[in-house]
Image 1 (cartoon, rainbow, N blue to C red):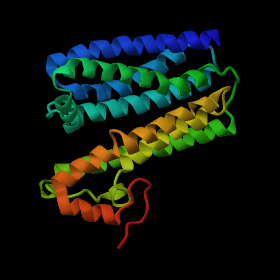
Image 2 (cartoon, rainbow, N blue to C red):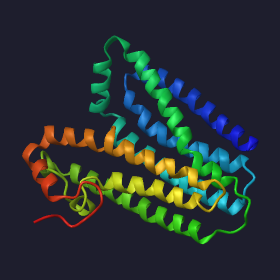
Image 3 (spheres, one colour):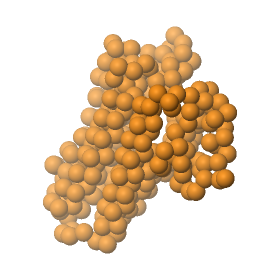
Image 4 (tube, rainbow, N blue to C red):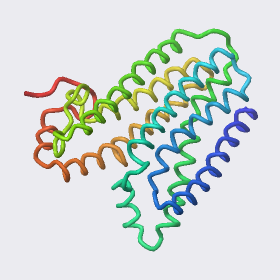
Length: 261
């Protein structure tokens, strides 16, 4: 338990220092949305640190670290190059900063620090799994890996389909119904949630793995109630109006399913 606490507090300290420096960078370049790709990459770095420092089974450590790095770096690269670099500030952050008024710097710092704390919490599956000394993978761990692979492919496909749609000039003002987007209004969010379910399932093969249920629970809350689906749909209704309302009526909100006629 002392080793677990030491590792977690080290990761938390890293996250808080990293977010403090990132806040200074965000102020300098006037782009608060840089926190989004940084958040994913920071969790991947924590997984690497756990995989390097913990004394669990080498095969299990390598596998979960690889999964975390592929997830974090793919998501960070996608958000950075498609949503941040060379792009206007994200409307969600513009709205936040405007609403904060004269306290924007302090409240943005507080927001970044909170993101660092949340990132440390989301690193828990990787720490718990990396500390498991039992050799070989159990059936539940294999299931977790397979679920992660399916979710990773699904999220990647959803992101690529959306970008292909946006790249077509004929798509301007229309709603993407390509591929997975014909079955869910937010397939990228659905598969992101499934990735964290997969990490939870994998962690169930290790002592205290049950506590990592907090990760899929939190990601579901964030997607449904905070900055995920509500903000995305508000923006879509403003920019696409009746076309998006028709899409809402015919297409599943989250879980992919056949569209209504």
